[in-house]
Amino acid sequence: MKTKYLAYVAALALSTTTLIGCADLDPVDYSELNSELFPKTESDYATLVNECYRSIRSSWFDGLFATDDRGCVALNDATTEILTNRTHIYKKLHDLNWDSTDDYLVGFYYTEKDPSGGGYRDGFANDISRCTSDLAYIMKATALSEPVKKKMAAEVRCVRAFIAYTLYDMFGPLVIAPQELLENPRNDRPLPRLSREEMVKFIEEDLRYAAENLPSPTDAEYGRFSTGLAKMLLIRLYLHETKVDKSYYNKVETLARELMQPANGYQLQATYTKMFELGGQGKANKEIIFAIPVNTEMVSWNDWHMFVLPSDFGSNGMQGGYHSLTSTWHFYDSFEANDTRRTYLLAEYKSKKTDALVTRGTYPNLDIGPIPMKYGYDADLFKNSGRSSIDPILYRYADVYLSLAEALYRKPGASAAEKLEALTYINAIRRRAGIADLAYSDIDTDEKFVELLLKERAHEFWCENGQYRADLIRLDKFVEYARDINGSPYADRTKEVYPLPKIVITDGKGVVVQNEGYD
Image 1 (cartoon, helix red, strand yellow):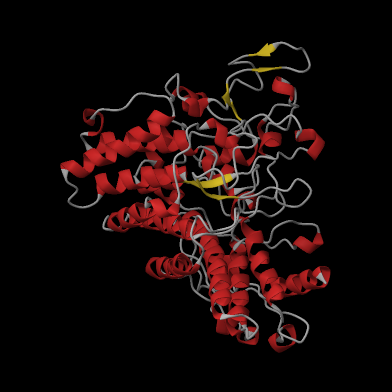
Image 2: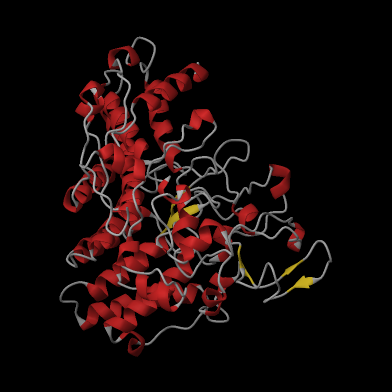
């Protein structure tokens, strides 16, 4: 039965293509899809929900948070001092030298390539519409009790908001197809992008519903959504909007304090590195807000090691990879010497070819920067086809601390006492990293605070969720750092968003407007 269900889900997913500009839609008989066969039982509807989770998995083929050179984590961190490469798209990203024809980049939004014809993902904007259609099925279901219906709807809305926020952060406001148009594709017409206000409202409403109807962090199954994730995503959305309206910091403060309530069960773990090593994830880790459980035999895996390790890597029983990504020595040197968060930025390794130690500056693997391994050693990697058993963590409780610190310091009318409180949260994170507390004199101006906060966020969350780029943008440092640190001759404010694919503009027939600075 499971095979039959998945076949119907696949048909449903293909039929609910979002209206990207004026993309072609085949007419769909929704009464036929909602037939005696599927969806009918609670298990059927659970399958729809699970299919929505698929978008945010870690998969090299089409996972939004793929732990390799095709995921948005690597892509976004490569626009900063955290990641780079000698050639390929990641050199262009590091230099901020991209355009609307770079498939690696614009393909996150939408691509003309047909996955069934040998391509991979078709763009994650389409998945927003799939969630919208699946949500309609769930809300009309007579086979579900009201509590089950609300929980399923909350999961789907959280997925939809998760995708929408991620793409909004990358590309700006999106084209969002309403349910009535998805149900009547014969009425296909070009749709404009939402305004900034409409985009924020769309995401916010989904996340507020999710926060009210998802299980608590203590009750949620590991790897599934909780009220904690919904509120964390709201924090990220509100931080994003502080660039244009600093009053959003008040909302960030409220949500952060809610997440700090003991009933949520969150706490900082004693050891930073252990969270990224074998056995360091799971329900027992009270710092995790959301992680992606890996399954080395199925299409949710962690193949980060493969994409960052040099081919001759031989330390700690490991084998080499493709070395598609590297960090920078500027980033490495920005850490204090005893900062434990630098542990898996490897400045040397043993070569399995020569059995010699390869050290900093050695061409071609350690001249540009250290190896950004991030995750701990996993000697069974090649027994699992290059896939690690370490779960990728996307959001942690440490983010609540640093988000609250920023809100307390930078909200309108912040008091001296609130700024001192902000420092306590930063120092708690630093203490866990094994480095000394900062004094108030280190943050007694907004410029000092911003510089320090960005450094802490980069050091704490490098190569986890790709949000450091967004941190730089909202705090007006993205262009400055790209010029002064990365040496980019292409840096200007138009690079604070990526371009939409050309096909979206073409099919939009003048209704969909490209981001400024792109053709």
